[in-house]
Length: 385
Image (cartoon, rainbow, N blue to C red; front, side, top):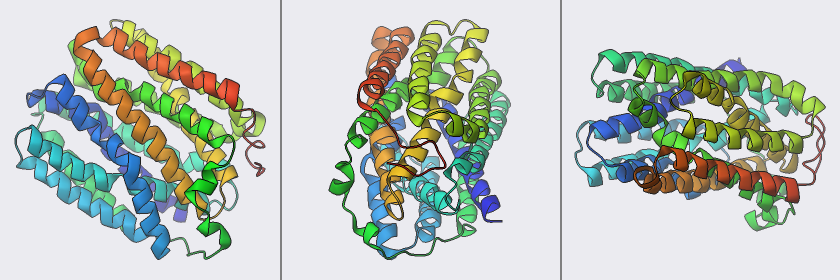
């Protein structure tokens, strides 16, 4: 029953992502915002993940409870998002989306840590719960794409607000992890960062998220410019997430037979290829389909491997802080850099070179893992360090 409630939360959480990430740039473009303004607005999620997750995780740790932060911030997200129905102009839209992004950044690291705490020392089972988030993304991206082909772009706001209200309800149903008052809970961030290979690992995570920046800001706009209908754009987004689901299902097997370092190297290599294909092959649907299938490796395998590594390295309540740190450096700083740089290069250099920039970021991450990460502990299922 606990797994079902966690799966439902992931489903609705990523259903909102499936409505927001592929289509909100198209919505903003229809509102008349420039490429640079769109990149700024869509990078707010990443900007807030720089510091906000650590603030929220400290609050949850301080009070020994994650659940109220999770459902409380979901309600505040809905209220913040509701202001988009009435605001006008860049400054007001920026303020509304900044509030939304601040509250949105709270929940995922807490629920990731909560989920792992419920798995009784079997972190390889994480993927089987997390894949319901991928399923939620697929359902939303397909339904919203079909909706926007027949309804005005403003209908995106109503669908997204409905999902945020559902997320609040799912947050209320989550289990609570009992508070643990142990010596490990007081370990400082500075002490965590003394782990020799943690900083190189975070640098690599930063670079792979920077590589994905152009994807999350401009992918749908890129395909609209090539004449693809929104239903087909939604199908391509869905194809990538279906590949992600398959990878999450296979991760227990992969983590039993391959070292996490080997999995990470594969994810970076796949990311280099993927963004070259998107940047230069968007005129070919089969090329785009292949690139989206690589999402299962470039994101799914990478994220599952990172979660497993952090679970091995940081026990107990350090899990929340480790997950928040990973989210801040990777999805926060890295995603922000990639998104903002793509906003600068999109109109000047074009899509091909913007996505090539993403491939170069991924290549840099591959070199860091190859040169600096010599071991990531035992294969999953055996705690190591």
